[in-house]
Length: 521
Image (cartoon, rainbow, N blue to C red; front, side):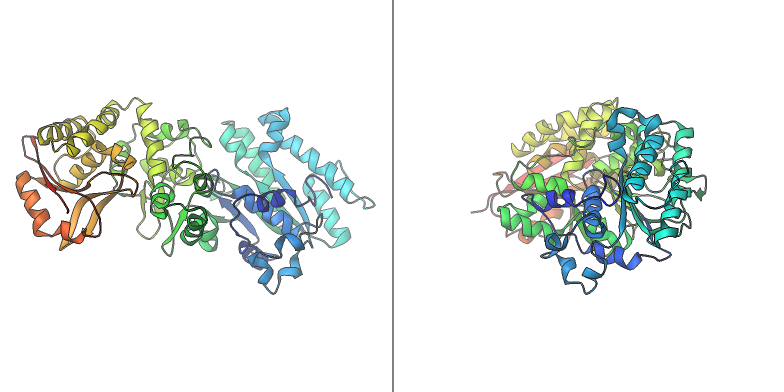
């Protein structure tokens, strides 16, 4: 047993011993089916804190010859699989964590040669008695071991894209990709290659240097979709165990939509929220400086799309041209696709649309915009709490004033002439409502759809708000439409007062508001 070759199962033990462990061992059935196949090279790209390392530790514990993990898996899902013991601790495993080599103080430029040197040393110690030429390239050594033992390797690399994220040295990046290509391309000693990272496999122009790898990403999760985070059923189970309100957890951390309408939650944030506060745990794992880079770009249409997204709308996107750039974007779609891979946007593959997934991520957008040079939106966010207070006070004149100011400030960025743009404006103007409400757009009510509905959280003593938006009409007519569609009747199950808010503007960009309070006895 070595540090990198045939490691022990300590990492997986640590996960099992934790207060919260969600069983994802079913993933092993998928990897078992890919052993020694044409599809045995897998690249799993997920955002930070979405369980990448935990998945690697799971596979290390299951496959490595360097440990006995039967007891650890005895109560997990994979133990019920008929092939469970067939592959359990049967293979030579190589485990590499790229940030670990950086932490040893060798620097990013020396990471690759240092890592190879350490791995060679481990291989020589693990396979004593074999004729191993340590001065030869790594792939020659692995091939020599395979030739003499007829045993293949399972290679697990955590944070494979670390060099791309930490260095802009193109020569270093190319050398690293060439190393991976030579290590994995059509090599008889590979039983399974499983590499994780935030970014998908690196591409050069239209060709992939690692085209033998199948992608499993936030854009194309394929058969691993349910293993990219916590599923809704898993979160409901945790909420019941820790006595947390599921609807609030959903509003904070849901929103990563996978094919088949699978809703995924950020695992780290859910775990932290079970015995902690409902808040954003995102900033603790990744500086919002990364998010601020694309927000500050002046790419054609990008800022309008950001406003639409913050307003609760979806934006069409083409994810096919992303080249793993982390700052040098040429198109709006590249920048937005980058945010999908980072977890700042959800992606609906069926409709080819992106959206801000939840309240946690909305806060990260707010933080990034406030600290950027985007003054138009920053001013609206700062006025948001005052607007909400004016709405609660039924101060129609003040509400109209704030909406008009927000609409005028960002009119240079968005189209000013339709109700959809007004909905985005109103959503941004009421941005602080997420602290008190679950905000719904196009909420199905009565005979039609309300433009926006603010549903108060269970512990919040605030009125429910129904908003109807109109152009070139009176605010009174918007209120009349709310009543005609019987919105309030469809919300009978909600206790407490209801505010009906009509907002409209005319061709002179003058805004009007009418608020009517329904007191429920």
